[in-house]
Length: 180
Length: 229
Image 1 (cartoon, rainbow over the protein chains, first blue to last red):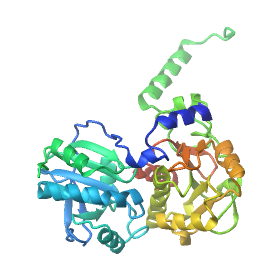
Image 2 (cartoon, chains in turn cyan, purple; image 1 turned 180 degrees about the horizontal axis):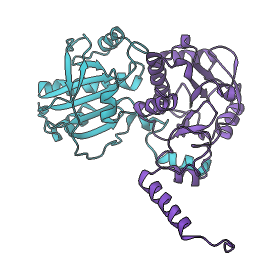
Image 3 (cartoon, rainbow over the protein chains, first blue to last red; image 1 turned 60 degrees about the vertical axis):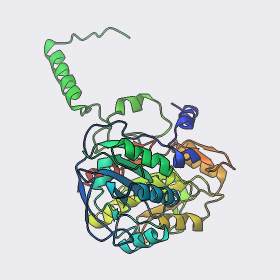
Image 4 (tube, rainbow over the protein chains, first blue to last red; image 1 turned 180 degrees about the vertical axis):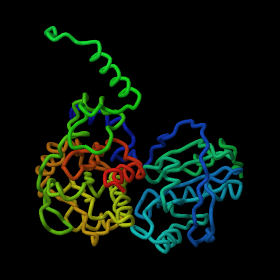
């Protein structure tokens, strides 16, 4: 496969260095049936996010995990639709934003808190310090959203930014209320 | 093809069959077929990769030698400088990218952080070459790296900037096989393969991650296996 074939292949891919990357809803895991073992994360003390141990995904409740990075513009732009979705589903769903930037190297808890304040986050936010959740959910890029049902089975994963409507629809499909 | 003149004994046939069975079960290449100078086991799709005639070096192939000006230490960097010294994780980016480059860079940052934490900073170098030198001035490239989380004080970061667009094409595409298409005016002006090479301290490619960025845990595990931690 030479250069021309490679580029031809790339043109169809939504995952590369094009505008499509940031807005596509590429399924990563497909319709998985395996449940994900919960991981314990320590939340950053920030608005809507008391400093406490989070069990993610939480058994018995639909969970939404948003992987982000503090350097990521698309992640910043995703905060508004995520916030709208959060307001609509409330506590019926575990909402958590997770950064897998290396803590203490690329980012500090204080910097995560500042980013959270700046982008009006008001639900739990935590670093994935040993990349355990990143590994479990196969997060190779940011932003990436994963929704899991009450049995911790992944029902939807997608990269990029999504509307509140899309997010709420996928939450509803996973069994979360999200009607409000 | 000519007919073999040496009769093949039953024992040889059995031995070969045995070896083939082992290869089949383990998914590994036998010692004889494995390329020289590699430490990691072959990637799962090695046979296909080898036959695909890819434009970039894959498992078991030498990393090409090229010299490109550096922007962190302001000295030229030669890709073979690391031979005998360090393993190398090398990728290709442009700072206007809002997609894959961010995650390619992030993989290098993750490895740098893990190396610093586990004490093998001296064993691994992190390199990124821009293919957009017109926009990526040395200052822009350096601050891009800093924003992503590269710690320049650790002394194992090598951000490189070919002097011209023409030179970038020669280095990035013609030498390393990172194919790209430049369309100025597009929201993201380069479409590219998205390669990261993991090269051992003998200058041999152990992994060429292509397409979707690899999971950071995959790269960290491969680097740790290579370093032996």
